[in-house]
Image (cartoon, rainbow, N blue to C red; front, side, top):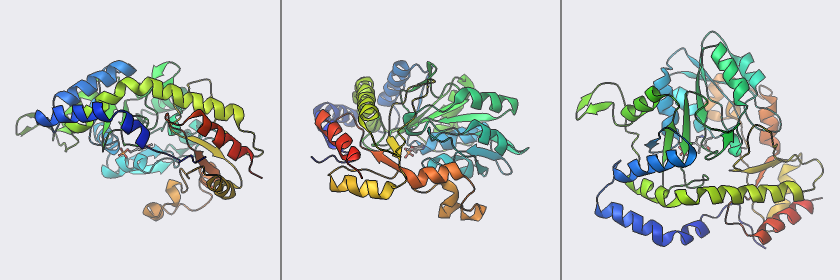
Length: 365
Ligand SMILES: *Cc1c(COP(=O)(O)O)cnc(C)c1O
């Protein structure tokens, strides 16, 4: 049986009529940039997930950038980020002239290690960007306690964790700002680029709303430096048709994860951690194995797609070679990059496909 690593086809075929009708309505009303669809999406998203409001944007990278502008990071400032994530986590500080400083992740959860975070703090540190990687909430109590002691601005990168909660609290409301991506492959995906920013702080949300449209409060009057971070009407229209399905999609991801956790028996493999502080929404189901490449080839030969997410930690990326951080700088992130392999996990997988993945993994010698 073939099990592609990811297939966006089934979900979009099932929603085709509804999504195209929504797009047609937006087209006919020429609501292309912001407008009613975006307003509706922000309200629906906030209501569904427990946010006071949401600010729709044109990608998941944009709210990271905007949050760094709001935090006031700039030249000479350091912002701590985990080196094992999607690269965009590190872009925000760079876009505002600040320096991303890496702090290692924890074994098992792939998330920022609070002790490593604290050890990376210098007199120049102004902020931290914990990532809820693969859908699993980071250790926010410890991270917030350290951040408060040092007066740091906390940006939660929730791109992979839409709908997840930390000790009952919606992610993104624990720090000063939370950022989401609705890139098509995320748990809630647009038909193109989209993202959002949330905050428990009304001042942060209002500032983000203003920066999103060129810092323009009154037409052609610009009170602060902003940019173009507007969400498109088409993307909001599609997202509005998808939102009512998010809870059941998340439940299905969790049910597949339970099958994997209960069914996979592979010596030397480490399965995703299940900490008590918050259940993952399983954007990825990432395991580690010392012979990861051989395991991946074996899976491919059995028809199971498996992907390397992420094969190179930030400090070993060529774009950051100038930092002079060599191999050995962040051993846990490096080991994760060398041993990780992600299995298919999306709501449209059939039970037979899930069983096929388990059988294929268990058959690895
Ligand atoms: C996807 C992602 C982003 C960036 O989102 P885009 O919509 O691709 O700009 C940022 N951080 C993480 C952790 C992501 O997974």
